Length: 264
Image (cartoon, rainbow, N blue to C red; front, side):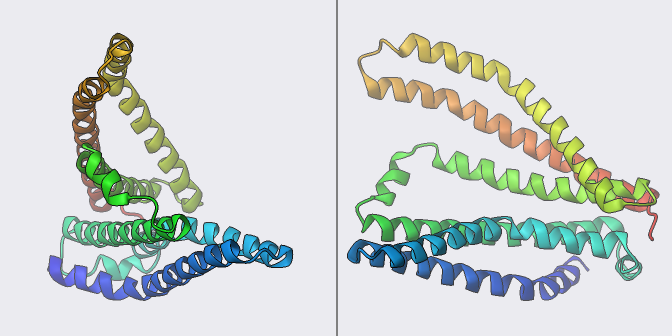
């Protein structure tokens, strides 16, 4: 049943993202062409026109990056908190399976969009720099890039479940559920940030003390190695916090659906 629900979710959402991805290709091509034109031609009118185009490109990049959260949040709200939810909860599956299917599909769309966004941005950097920026060298020399990627992946999952939980908690109110969802999201986000800061304070203090002690170190490689070794526990803690909070929010959302469901 989970596979069938995921297949249904993909069919219902892919039409939204295909135009977004096509638009991403278009604005990337436009930005690359614009950088070439501005480099070869010095025309004030052309520069103004291309400058306005670059503003549109920047807005487009921002929109593409946040698009999964916008459209999939709207779909989640529509299919779980409005009259359309009657169809959602009449399928022969328990609420946990329905929630898991929606989470997996939303998470995969978020990851795919982020990967395409990053690839597009890297292509744009190559166009602007004319290949003078060695991106492979940058990533190969960054020893913590794998941990950074893992931290981002768990953060994406956490953000998705934060939105789901906020919408699920809006079942507690009768009217103005959209505003209530935003309020619950802000509250959950604030609580999470407080927990993260409290948990990371000891590591931040330790890193600052280590940096001060190594400032006089003449061997820069040794200094970087020491600082890098201190970053690993921070990444592990961040991943652990994201995972723990994600699991808690998943079961909270499932509880709201099973015990507090109040459809309009």
